[in-house]
Image (tube, rainbow, N blue to C red; front, top):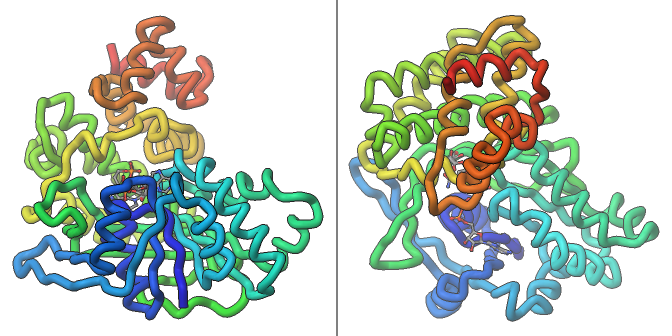
Length: 379
Ligand SMILES: NC(=O)c1ccc[n+]([C@@H]2O[C@H](COP(=O)([O-])OP(=O)(O)OC[C@H]3O[C@@H](n4cnc5c(N)ncnc54)[C@H](O)[C@@H]3O)[C@@H](O)[C@H]2O)c1
Ligand SMILES: O=P(O)(O)OC[C@@H](O)[C@@H](O)[C@H](O)[C@H](O)CO
């Protein structure tokens, strides 16, 4: 069995590639990073180390890689033959890979009639759906009709903290022990792939919102407050009492939305929050606040981890989200100069003030109650 996986980065190698290998797939990584592609082809294996007391290590074998910039035709040929396609490239890159993916699917339609599932493993609501839209923009009307029968585009939620890291062995990747991969079963075509570690569900929405509005809401707020306090890592930020109490407050707020909306058991959800906070405090992981805070325009988007739970708290529960607002304010203050999106937000604020940034990036109009609350917090 062949799996084509776009993105041989932290999650690609440290999580998805490993699970696919364990399930018996030969993994073909597609990336634009020449050094990583060459190393994968020289060794055909890499190490994954668990960031825990025992530092257990496994070797992921039977892998190779293709550079999609210099070797797009090869990527297309492999998609035409693949049994599964997955991605972990980052939400902003999905529209870019859509081109080569569409060409691979077009080629496949000329030959094999084997069904194929494509799963985007990105931190966003509807990642695979977005990828499908971008792919379909490149197909003819007839190809779209055949594709509807042959190709499945299930959305997914993925959870495993894999920090940026510099290791002597450039292919090695250290990952936290915990992981969760949930896939929307209703959109699968053909047989359900047998991959240990994937939970297939009929309704993904509660799972993706629970993950994004707990793990990623808490993570982002820790990062932005930590940055503001001059701290470098997520653990350092969580060790700061003030940061921690704001993060805990924000997770109670997003939690009350999730409990109300999906009828989650309140005690079980509090246990889920506790577990996540412990993961942020993992002493074997050093995760920079600038990685976790990366791309603040994306993170301040209307359906993402900060604005969506705050809006739902305000609109669904009719209350003011005190702690989520503090997190949003910290995100708007994030001025890390090596992050292009942070620089762009600061420029917008300089030109048009906070109201303009809230309108442009968060899609919050002036009369939304959150706008006044966020600006009050910023002032
Ligand atoms: N790291 C984590 O803790 C974590 C956990 C869960 C989900 N995620 C999600 O997984 C995705 C990847 O995150 P990551 O942390 O692995 O990032 P990363 O930067 O380590 O990996 C991304 C990889 O994509 C490659 N890439 C960039 N453009 C490409 C292109 N056009 N074609 C093919 N490959 C391309 C990069 O070279 C890089 O190797 C993101 O959506 C992220 O939100 C990350
Ligand atoms: O990947 P991002 O930029 O959407 O978010 C940064 C981190 O919060 C994220 O990568 C987490 O480590 C991950 O989502 C844990 O499952």
